Amino acid sequence: MFVIDADIISIFAKSDNISLLHELFGDNAVMTPAIFQEITAPIDYGYEFPYAIIQTIRTIQMNEDAFVCYKKISKNKKFGRGECEAIAFCLKTSSIFITNDKKARYIASDYEITVISLPAVLKAIIKKKNSNT
Image (cartoon, rainbow, N blue to C red; front, side):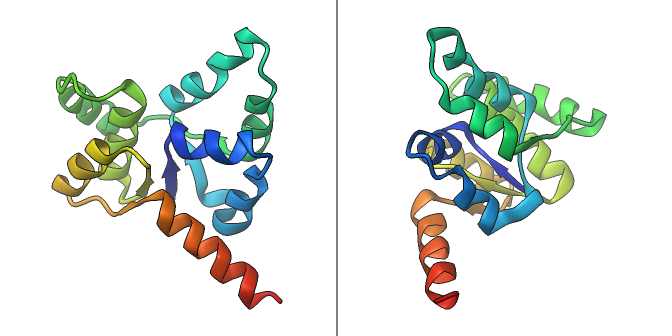
């Protein structure tokens, strides 16, 4: 699975390109409950883009092992709940973390989690588009 952080998901949704993430990762693109909460918060302020995310990116549930790991990681107050949940879930499920947050990438790498940044996602989309033409 590919756990996509709120920053990446928001970029694609705000530009009306959330379908590109689905094209690239299919049903393997997921978000944690905390990322879901981050994504849906703008609805309270009248923003519409979160609805496209909810319809496209599946929200996974944290299993007990991931939750225990999350509690340990969340003691580091430098990260939000979304990043901590994503790192914990990836660690316990061997999933890949996609984030644009530099600090979160470093921590995830410390846990030997495979991390993909925004530039890598964009390159993969371009490559996929070019191979389909």
